[in-house]
Length: 424
Image (cartoon, rainbow, N blue to C red; front, top):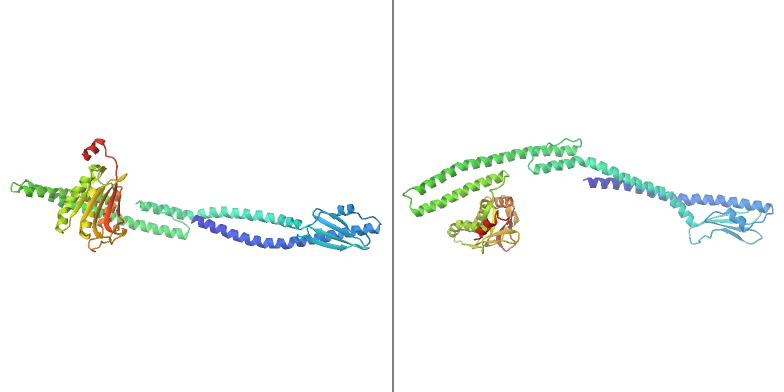
């Protein structure tokens, strides 16, 4: 904005100065030759009077006498009635636009005085030089004044941009100043109202997340206790007890997921990072989803050639993988493929199916549903937020079939011994 104001102000000043300068140049080009012609006529008349006086007193007229009567860049020619032509002064190029004055001499003869066109050009340049100097000075002054004025006018909008940036960072308690400029005051008023509404909305969402998490913890805890009691009953068969132990593990994972989602909603850090084998974690996740895939006559293929030791939070990674595998089972076709790789500097977990890709990157936005049209359209959006919180990225591969890639950083394990143990 400031640059545009300066450019507009300077441009307007330049236009005014150029219009004025053009009129002055036209005037100078007309007036200077007329003035020089008048001066040349008077000089010629004076020379003719001097020569007439010398003729009256019978004094000879020589080239030396004429040379004393002519100035630089002038040429004087005297044609007496009875005598030879006499010339004095500088040579004049006849190709130039020269000025010529002719005056008769009393007693006979005439005087011709010629002013060189170079002298005319020098006189015009002498008149135009101050005009050009003043014009440049005015342009510089206009630029300085325009910069100061634009800086003063744009200051409220720069301050409001800074306030909006603070709002974007989650600081809604920033004081929005008042301004005398009506447009800036309207923007400030809108920012104050928007900050109040967003602050209230964020407060309600955080309270809802906290209340939901609190209300979920109680039944989850009660369910876990009931499952533990069932495993300790003497009447519970061993196969049932094993299944109950797996159910308890799922309840624990659900509790961890609730806590992680609550922390994500509050903008806090996710679970603490630990040394893990990403391949083993992915394999466990795949095993959990195999029964559901089998129930829909689908299979899951898992490909991982060697352990990959990283230091990341396992819970959020499992949540993202759950979303991707469930999405492939519910909305995809054919075999679900899961593979883990370790390119330079990061790790990649790919989850895909054999169905044709009919979705784009907008699937990562909330309320965007997949091909089947069912669901709430928030699973991939939440998975994207979790991946970003982990320092990674969730993307849709540019392939004909639907394949999602979870890219995660590969920080070194806390100890080399821990990394070696995970690898073994």
